[in-house]
Image (cartoon, rainbow, N blue to C red):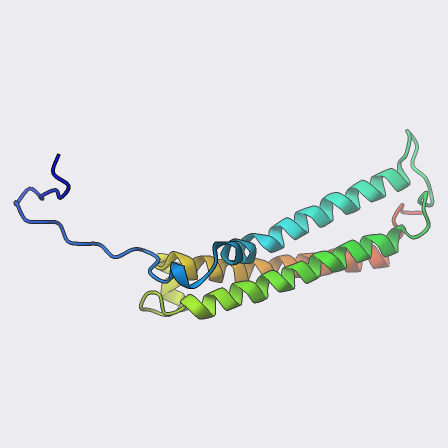
Amino acid sequence: MNATRHSQAGALPEQQPHPSPHRHRVRRLALWFGLLGAPVAWSLQELINVSLAGQACFPRDTPLAMPLFEHLSRISVGVAAVAFVVCVVAGVVAYAVWQKTRNEKPGDAHQLLGSGDGRTRFMAMAGMMTSGLFAIGIALAALNLAAISPCGG
C-alpha cells in the first residue's frame, strides 16, 4: 500500500502541525504532576481525615463525645497542611511548564481556554487553575478542622 495518500482531487494532503509542538520542552511527569497533584492531594487528605475521625469518634455503634486519641485535630490539620503544600508545589510546577510552553501556539490565554490549541500549555494552565482551586478547598477544610471539635462534643 502506498504510504502517502492522495485526496479526492489527486493532490497530496497538507502536512498538519502537531497540536503540541513544544511537548519536548517539558517532562511528562512534571506536566501530569502539575495537572493532577492538587486533586490527588485533596482526595488523599479527605480520605485520611475522614478515616481518622471516623475511627476516633465512632469506633463502635455509639458516637463518642471525645476522640479516642487526643491530638486528632492537630493530626487532621497537619494532613491538610501537607496536602496544601502539595497543591502549592503542583501549582508552581504547572506554572513552570506553562512558562516553557506558553508560546506553543499563537494567541493569548483567552484563545487558549476557548480552543485548547497547544495541549501542553493547555494542560499547564489547567494545572495552575486546579491547583489554586484545590488549595482554597484544602485551606477551608483545615480552618473547619481547627475551629470545630472533631467529634462534635
